[in-house]
Amino acid sequence: MSVPLLDECLSVLTRTPAVLDVLLRDLPEVLTTATEGPGTWSPSVVIGHLIHAEKTDWMPRMTIIMEHGARRAFDPFDHEAQFRQREVRSLPALLDEFKDLRHESVGRLRAMDLTAEQLETNGMHPALGLVTARQLVATWTSHDLGHILQISRVMAKRYKSEVGPWVAYQTVMK
Image 1 (cartoon, rainbow, N blue to C red):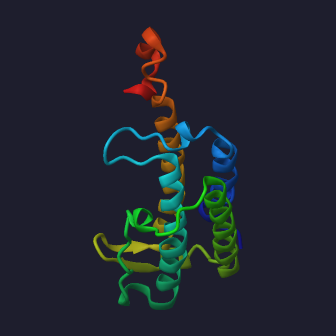
Image 2 (tube, rainbow, N blue to C red; image 1 turned 45 degrees about the vertical axis):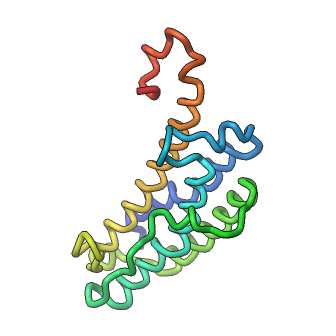
Image 3 (cartoon, helix red, strand yellow; image 1 turned 90 degrees about the horizontal axis):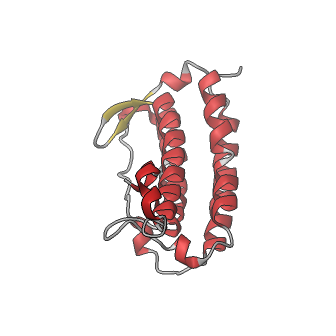
């Protein structure tokens, strides 16, 4: 049975790697390593974060919900684990890894063949308390879209000093 929200989310989740690949691959490093200042993330760092989330967040948490419900809390998610990666990899390698991991995750999610009722199954978030599988999938989707927006904003701000008076019309620069 098709579940509209799940189908909608999968339509975004399956496209994210291609969107990021088209947006970032083979760009000058000055754009892919740009940040908005100290303590902010470059597009390359965001891809590292997405890889970490793909490995330790979305599908592991969905599996916990489906196997244990709210009886077992999710493992805490380290939002900055990408900064502790020992191996330095090129952006193309990161994009390829993200694409492969996402393909695997989407395949696993589709194979679960979740019903609307299963999407209402509760899980236990370590900080937020009770959450549902539906909320997890929606959050996964909005997380992707938020990071696409973040990457675009960071790259646009690279040109803030170059656009001159047009900065007044560039809401992305604020």
